[in-house]
Amino acid sequence: MMNLGTMVKGLVSDKIASQLTQHWKHDEGTLKFWRASSNFVYVFEHNQQRYFLRFNSEQERTWEEMKAELDFLNYLKNCGYPCVSTIPTIKGTEIVSEQTSEGTYLAVVFQAAKGKMLDENANNQQFEAWGRTLATLHSLSKNYNPVGGPKRKNWQDVLEKIEGVINRHPHEHEALEELRNVTELLEELPTSKETYGLIHYDFQLDNLFYEEESSMFNVIDFDDAMYGWYAIDLVAALDDFLEGDAPFSNDRVQSFLTGYRSVLSLDHALFQQYRTFQRFKNLYTFARLLWSLEDSEMEDAPSWLESVREKFIRVQANLRWEFLSNVNS
Image (cartoon, rainbow, N blue to C red; front, side, top):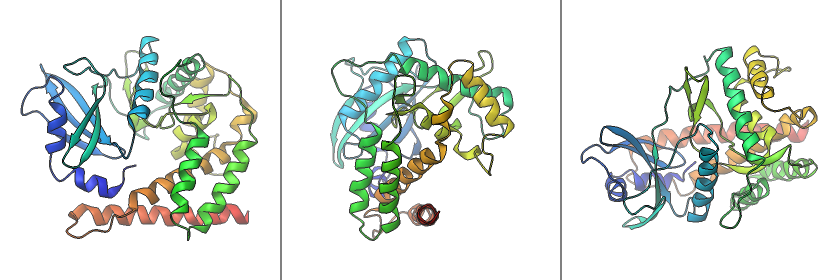
């Protein structure tokens, strides 16, 4: 999730994207804005092929973090995992660091993912393929051992960042108490090669493209990857479907777990900590919202900004209420 002030600056025009695109082979006149969330994303064409330019301010994500992300992505690709490939620049590099009038930006280009994006109406067979694709990722992660160079963050690093954001907002008492409680719960959990490693963290359907022929998903957006328990990935992926007193009884959730178990076994004791992992996810989301809203009140703001701010503030309020409920339970 991007700081809204940074987003406003980056969306004033396509100047930054146009400047960055010059480092890759491209067809003039094809660059178009795609979306802005954690990153700015533009689409362009070269020889009738679509590519995606992704970039962010150096203040949002460092070169080391991006390099570590791409190292893991390239490892997976070399292992035959269905994920997108990066496209080298004209000079043969993967990452571009560019000084612009709005600051330093880091950029990378990806090929377009094959397949179609599904939604919550995906069928049981597709849910099973979804679980199988995640388990395949985890099985490869278990043997991933980067030697030298930047490493991805871990859950402790994330909690440290969360603490830094919350401390800038000392009135957020509920969030600070929730941070203390979640930290204690996570510190008690065991780690092993079978249960802990580099996870995607955002393995939801909007980051996956389904191919009917292979019954597999092509995976994008590894920029949130971190070291944590594999069960976190399952809980984060299924978050929209885990409801009620028996959250895993849903037919499609069961299909997902069947697909996962077809590749890897599940540590049931750890998986039952799903409420702890949900609380971690909610806390992380809350801190990102806080960060995104910092300095977002501005004069001559674009028309879309106020509605986004209102949405973020509403989600924050709901999360505060949940934090308070966790303390009282």
